[in-house]
Length: 364
Image: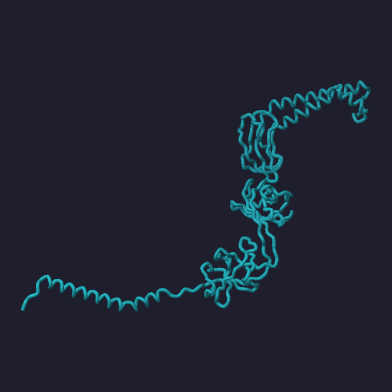
């Protein structure tokens, strides 16, 4: 018997090994497929579309017009020294609250005091001269009110009394103006100078701001002009997060500017934390009756059109709508042409972004 050649033996053995491996793999795949399929089925249960709903009715819709403005103090004044001179004291600081009549600053006033005393002496001398003139006219032990006006006028002029009165009043005024006082209660702002500096009369020494009341000037569009009137309430909301409060429209400028805007003024009391120049949002609300009102989250976009989903018997029905108006949280809507939307309909307000027409849904 002839023996097989070594090369042929190796080739035959390799073929048998490959056949065994392929057979094992095929049978292994067939055996594992049902178990894997069952495992995947168990791991991926069917998802449910859980939604929240609301029933819509015809009701008052609160239309909201929003604009922006800045707070400006109703009572505000730039205060100047009327006299030239050197600053002696500044007993206040920026941001300090002062009462009406409080001293804000003083000038060195030795010269002003001297001029005042000199004018006072001159007035007293003129009064004596005046009495001598009246005596020379024969008015002895007579009260001034009993002297004829023409004789009294002559005595005042001849004695220099009239001029002495003017000099005294001027010296008194200048001395008084060496002290800068608050004309009303408020907060001090803009103090820049220091004691012993020469007063700068070209700019205010400080600005006094009463922060009890503020005015807000804000623009409205020409199309919104008819929605407001003097006396109407507004809500003022500071951008910085201070407390919001109510105000009242006080002025409506009867002119539309080149940008198509009408300027409105409102006044508001300071509830605390309001500052001059603070940025605020102004909200004006007006009730519009007999509107279909839906929450904003009920409306989504499909094919660049606004739609909502009506809920009926576990099915979501895609409904085209027209948005008539909006405020911060709601839309006023109507059914688009060819669609249906009525009071009493139930609409979906959550988990509606990925819904399709006639999707099956469940209420949470």
